[in-house]
Amino acid sequence: MISTADFKKGTKLLIDDEPYAVIDFMHVKPGKGGAFVRTKMRNLITSLVRETTFRSGEKFKSPNLSYSDMLYLYEDEGMFNFMDQESYDQTAFNSDKIKSIANYLKEQTVYTMLSFNGSPISVNPPLFMELEVTETQPGVRGDTAQGSCNKPATLETGLVVQVPIFVNEGDLVKIDTRDGSYLERVKK
Image (tube, rainbow, N blue to C red):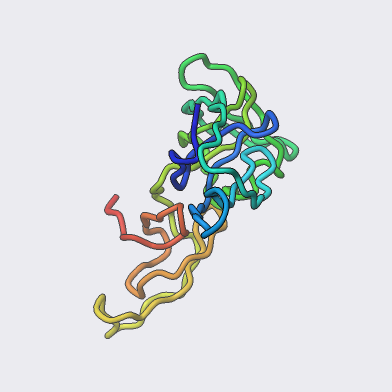
């Protein structure tokens, strides 16, 4: 059981038979009356955000969540197919379920799948990915790696990021999937 005293950002709990993750919370102790907790939570199935107030000390069940490593195989008619690394079972997601990570889908890459009561509800990319630059403007002679000169670059997945001017087409770059930012150029 999870109490309101145990709330932290990312705490997962079961409300109305649906899993939620706490985004933000605040303990409030008014001058009169009992203490309470204001929370902002995201439904893990629908991704809708809900703001709710709970009495202090209220308890909730922990959701039956499991994580598994899934290999992205291919896309076929709008369905994205993944294979479990342990059982070799295949699972297909429609484009609505993976639209938040569509710019990070690369075949033969391992993703983390979140399941609730045995049915998959979301797919998360690795924290860092190495992607090839497919289109960018060439750097001009005299440009250096110093300074804050950036240019847009289109990666193999279609993601457009700002990269330093010394990055060229065909280079591999490391991307942080949490915010889509460039980290470094990777040597082949």
